[in-house]
Every structure is written in structure tokens, then in C-alpha cells.
Amino acid sequence: MTAGVAGPGVPAPVSARDAARIVRAARVRPRFSALAIVGAAGSLIVVLVAVFGPLAAPYDPNAPNFALILAPPLSPHHLLGTDQLGRDVLSRMLYGARPTLAAGIVSTLLGTAIGLPYGMIAGYFRGPVDMVLMRAADVMLAFPFLLLAVGLAAISQPTLWTAVLALGVAQVPVIARIARGATLEIRDLEYVQAALVNGERDLAILGRQILPNVLRPVTVQTTVAIPTSIVGAAILSFLGLGVQPPTADWGGMLAQAQQYLYQSVWLGVFPGIAIFLTALCFNLFGDGLTDALNPRGRR
Amino acid sequence: MNETPLLRIEDLRISFRTARGPLLAVNQVSLSLHDNEVLAVVGESGSGKTLTALSVLGLEPPGAAVSGRIWLGDEELRGASPRRLRDIRGASIAMIFQEPMTSLNPSLTVGRQVAEVLRRHQGLSGNDAKSRVLELFDLVRLPDAERHLRSYPHQLSGGMRQRVMIAMAVACGPSVLIADEPTTALDPTIETQILSLLRDLRASLGMAVLLITHNLGVVSRMADRVVVMYAGHVLEQAPTAELLASPAHPYTIGLLGAVPQPGSNADTRRLTPIAGQVPLLREEPTNCVFSPRCAYAEPRCLTAQPALRQVTSGTAHQAACVLDRIPDPARETAPRAQAT
Image: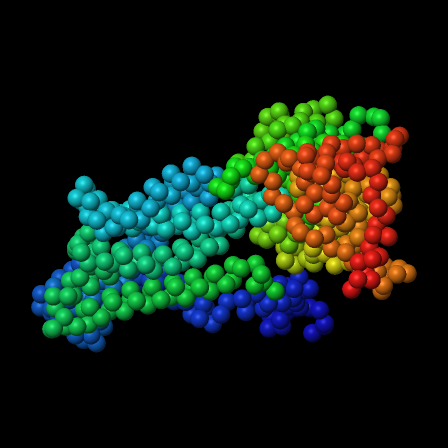
């Protein structure tokens, strides 16, 4: 075989461009700590379960089997056992990931979509604008989100989306405060002054100069808020204010398991562990993301 | 200096209402900047230098009450619309700041930040903007310009960041560059490089420079003319050489006495600090603002803030002091040195 000819089984010569890319990738990787990678992997698994879980479920999650109720885990055909109606717990867990995760992520996105511009406007314009917006935010903050969820459920039927709305609105003042605080700090920095000196408009300064720097603290808050909202969604389901039976979701499964804790403790253990691990993984990932997003951390 | 000045400030007064009463930050300040001139504004912290410069751009802090008139050529800036002012900022009048560390956005590449000014005022984007940024980086002698297009500010040294700031400032060919203590945060070798860059750019781009500083060494190397400010008032103005050689106001004499002079008597000559500190004015002063710290104060100094007057007829040297002759500072410092 002549040199330079790439045949089957012969590794293609590495071009300089590829080499540079490999070196760069190798240099980027240490930016994430080991814990953050565990968190990211765990979060990814949860997301994959939410997306593809139903395809892998061995049974219809809502099909009862009264011949086999409260079967313990590792029973034949039912790896995680069955519940009080004889439904397969594994299938319900796989189906339940989707509403649980959706509630956590969508409500956080909703809260950020409103809270971020809200806080940035308050912080940038200061004075009376800030006063009015932030006192309104204080009122929102003082309003318990459970009560809001109860109110929304009373107006319409309680569904996943009323829970998402309640959880999202509850996050608006929290995100707004963080965005405002960061904006206040940044708007007095010299580069904002420099942008003013260069004739930039308020909107351009908010979008180009301030937003990229506010995103960092807000992203931190978001990654903390997602697991909190997942737990919040579980609480709402537990109270019957979110996803309605027979649809499976982890919070609702936990709520129903409560009545059977003495007979079959695993009914509560599996969704509980799932919620706990999901929240933990997202938190670890969030912490890692915070460190990685710091431009000073880049080598 | 008979031609119309490029930038003219007339009777500028800036006051604030604070929780502890009114505060008069700048009072009766008039100055003019001519084509191609470097005018240094010298004074201690709190003397109103930066505030004067910001008010030229209409960027005084919120709550400031500004009166007086400011012209750029024939155009009055104090009455201009916010929209017009935004068009002037960065295009006709540009400004660079003291702290190159914080004057650049840490989240954006420096190339993008310079391109942003070009986009704003000249509508350049994409490759046009990129090649212009490269030209500017070469103009400010930023080494490795191509690579630094994609650098973040923290990857650059202080001197390089200041070069980027200067590139942003001169991007649209301003006629006036306001440099607010441009080298205070830099080490002396870098300071020398930045000053010589500013000098060259002034000549090649035909800008006038309003140099705000408290460093008389920078003044002597850069400025054509000097304005000395104290507690919001102009106390003396003169061509640089004349001011350094024969200062007429006791405050200027004091400032010069507080600067170490390298040379023959460096070891023997004591530095003489000016006792006391800059007063905060609450209202129109009823005495010479410097009189509380002035070694030569007389009863008539306590009746009013003196107006600027010619020191020697036929020159551009003016001082706001009622005294005709100040005792020679060299002789004045000698007895103090012996006393200790």
C-alpha cells in the first residue's frame, strides 16, 4: 500500500483543521466539573425518558389489571410492581416523566420570558418606572403560588397547563428581581456609559450591552428554578391541582401512593426517588453551567 | 487663536439637589477647544472635570441641573434633541475613559464592539465592518489585529484594551476626542505608548483632544493649552509652557509644588502637599473657592470668587486671583524645608 492512500482499515490522515478541532475540544472539556457532567448526563436521561419513555413502556399505563393489584417490584412481567388498580408502575413512571418535566421546564421558560424583560426595564430606567414595577413584583411575590393554582383551578378545570401557568407566574417576580439587580449593576458600568457616549439607543443598549451580561445570573436562577418547579408541579398534582387521574405523573403517583404506604411502600418510593434525582441532576447541571458560562473561566 | 473654536463652553453651571441640600458641582466654567488642539483640563478628584465633559455630550447624571451654553462649531448642543445628540455622540464627539478594564463589555468580542459603533453611525455590517475594524486596529497599533477580532476583553492587557477603546472612539472620525484620564490605570511604559498614539492620531486624523487629567507630567507631554479647575471653577488657563514656567494662581503653584521633579535637586527638594481638601460647594461661593487652603489669602479674597483676568497683557494667560504678584514658589518652599 502506497503512502498517502487511505484504504479500508487505514485511518484517514488527520488534517491540520481536524487536529485543531480536536485540540480545541480537549481544551474545552475541563470547563465542566465531574459533578456537572453527572448532572448533565442525568438530566439528559430524564429528558430522553420523557421523550421516548412511552415507546419503551411494556404496558398501557392506564390499563387496570384487577387480578394483580399491589404486586411488589420484581414480580414476573412487572419490574416495578403494580399499583392499587393493577396498573404497571414502570409504564406509569415512563409515561409520567413527560408531564412532570414539561411542567418544570415550560413554567420556568414562561417565568423567564416575562420576568427577564420586566426586571431589565425596571433596572435600566430606574426612578418611578422601577418603583412601580418592583412594588407590583413584591405584591406578586407575596401572593402564595398554591393559592394562585387553586384560583386558576377554580376558574377552569385543573389541568397540567393551569399548574404550569401558576408555577410560571410565581417565578416572574423572582426572575424579575434578579434581572433588575444585575441590570442596575451593569447599567452603571463604564461600558454602558461608553455605549451611550457612542450614541446608542436605550433599546440597543438593553439588548446588546446589558442582556448578554444579565443572562448569566438569570440562567443560574433558571437552572435552580427548573427542579423547584418540578417539585412544585408534583406538589400541585399531589394536591389534585395539576394533572388529573388517570394520566400518570410523578407527583400524582406520589399522592395516590400515600394511601397504600403500609401495604406497598414502593408505590411512593419510585416516583419520590425519580423526582429527587431529577431535581438533583438539574441542580448539578445548573451549577456546572454557571461556572462554564463565566467568560473568565475560559482558558 | 482668533478662528471660531471647534467646541465652546460658555458659563456652564451644574448643580444637584441632594438629600443633604444643594450641591454646586460646576460653576461659571467657560472654555474653548480649537481645531487640532490638545486642551488639558487639570484638577483634583471632584473638581468637576469629568462632569463638564459629560455635559458636553448631554450625559450628565440624572438629577443634574445644567445651565450655560455649549457649541460644537455653529451648533448649540444644550438645546439639541436627544436624537441629534445620539447622532453626535460617537460620530462628531467621541470619548475614552480611564478604566479600560470596565469600559469594554466582557460578554462581547472586541471586534464586535468596535463594529457596533460602525454599524450605528455608518451603517456598516458584515465584511465591510470587519475590514474597517481591522484597519482601525492597525491604526491604533494593536498587534495581531486579525486574531484579536475574536478576542474577549479579559484576554487583552490593559494597554491593548485601551487601544481597542481608542479604536472605537476614532472609528467614525470624530472632530473632538474627549479623553478622561486615559492613562491613569496603565503602567508608565504603556502610558507613554498610549500618549504617543494619541498624539499621532490627533495629527493624522485632525482631531482636537480635550484631555482630562490630574497628571501634570501627562499635561507637559501632551497639551497645547491647560485649564486648571478647582471646586467646579476655572482658576487659571494658559499655554502649557507658560503655565508650567510661570504659574499665576496659588493653586497652580501648589499643584506644581506637589509633583516630583526628576533631575538635579530630586533628593533635596521636598514635595509640598496642599493642606486641606477640595470643598463641597452648596451655593454660589462668597469667597475665593481656594482661599481656605491658600497660603497667600488676604481679607479681600473672602468677599467674592474672582473672575478670570489677564496675567500679562497680550497673552492667553488668565488667572482667577486678585493678587498681583505671588511670592516666588522656589523661595517660598525653601524655609519650610529647613524647618524640618
